[in-house]
Image (tube, rainbow, N blue to C red; front, top):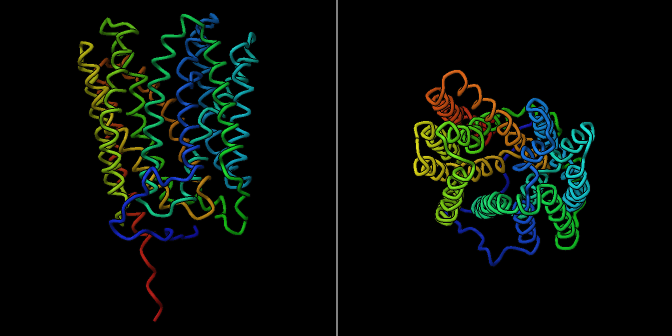
Length: 414
């Protein structure tokens, strides 16, 4: 494996770039990220759409797995393309494709068309993430500024996702889920326009400046980060898998689940400004945030495990709110580590590969939730969720050692 060093770093304690000084391109990408997620109804409401088509439970499950497979493939594809055809072209292409395929998903009437549309929709669903991650890494070399912008991006994603859940729930009965998918397509079209008009054109990274793809597959640091993130995000995804199942077992309705989501969104709005500033200051240090990633995994594991012992709306809502610090810290810390280990010219590829952990978590979490609840009930579910968090934290130890070893300066020859 080719050993690389981190890019030139800011001096210890350097203040991160303030929002007022961010270039138009970065602001445009953050606005586009918020827009696509705020109207991103395709993933959270796809199960309801499939149910309205009177498909069997098995068919719905297979279609959702196809969507997840597309998501996983798309994460790598768009990150790879971002390094080869440029950030603007990749983002505009992905969002243009989304604007076409989501109406097809809304109007599909045959199983083959529905399955194909679901797979392509999964491919484009999270396309902005690796592209925006790479664009931020290109623009900012100092860790504090990069972490500050990534924190703002994560805040936009979290608040937008909460808005999508709330607005989609209110509008689904009034205008229908197909109309929500059309709205999602319109948001993607708007994102493509933003990319073309406000994001500066950039050419592909020259082949000589890119690390070989095989180096990424052999990078032990990247694999450890993937495993750590997958474990932590699996515990995080319990918010959308085991939590509704646990609430249903307690005799609570989908509307009651909405209150737990509201508590989660409120905690995001309350805690994000403080945690973002704190994490941005820590990013200016020489040490990668492996310790913070371990902390986030433990917070996610314990908070979502506690939901197994809740019996009322306040109890479930408290568990959902307690998970928020772990969620915020996890994405910022993982982004910091990813930027440090990504070779110059391969930020998109590394970001795309890391994005597969999100797709993996949304597939693994419901599988883990259904298995644990079926075979041992809430106690086994709590143990399984906690184990995921503890495993993510434990993997941070070899990850930290590996990152430090790769970053250590070579000893000069005598």
